[in-house]
Each structure stands twice: as C-alpha cells, then as structure tokens.
Length: 148
Image (tube, rainbow, N blue to C red; front, top):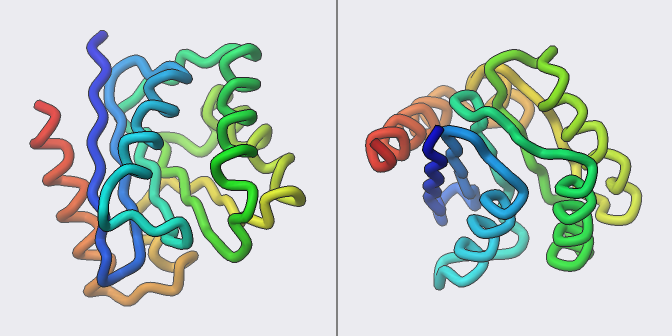
C-alpha cells in the first residue's frame, strides 16, 4: 500500500492541515512534520488537523517512542496549541492507542489533543464557524486530489 502525505498551511486561520493515506509509519509522520516546519508560512503556534481517515497506521512501540521523542523535542513549548486527529473510526484500536500515548505527554507539552471522526466535530472543538468548516472540508478534498 503506497503512502502519500500532503499538507496545507492556512495562515489566515492559523491552522495546518495534514493528510495521510496508505500505510503510515513513524518516519512518514516525522518526515511530514519536518517538511512543514521548513515552510516560510509555518508558525509554531498554529493549530493542526491530522487527517488519518484514509490511512492504515503501521506503528509499533518502537515507532511510537520515536514519534514521542520527536514531538517532545520539536514541540516542547506548545502551550495553548491544539492538535486534532481525524479518524475513520474513533474506536479503532491503533489510532486510539496512538492518541492515548501522545496524550500522556500533554503535561510536558501543554498541548491539547483530540480524536474525532468528522470535520464538523473538529471545527466545533476548535470553535470555528460554518464557513471555516467548509474551508477545512475543501482543503482536505484538495489534499486528497493532490496525492492521487
């Protein structure tokens, strides 16, 4: 299964949207985060939506440790920042395990994290209006087209 990733920085909304498809491993996640951090429009304080609804996470305990170490180094001063994971099924064991493990470091990062199954739920959590929800939906559709 081919892995593809894409992202868009919505400067006016102070939001980064990441999209993953295929079999996603730790290096895919870390690699995309590193690419985003190099963008001129990147801002550390921007919130993030991570859409993994079309992805199959292939992350074991060692991979999870690598992701956690990376996040702890890159985002150690993430006070107030929010990251939302969009999943196909909130009950998916792999995705909720990843979320739970990331959530354990919240006290160090002061980052708020949530797992959702719809863009509408993510928008509500972020406090966005309907227009912004539509923008997020259309951006995700563009990212999907980009990786085809």
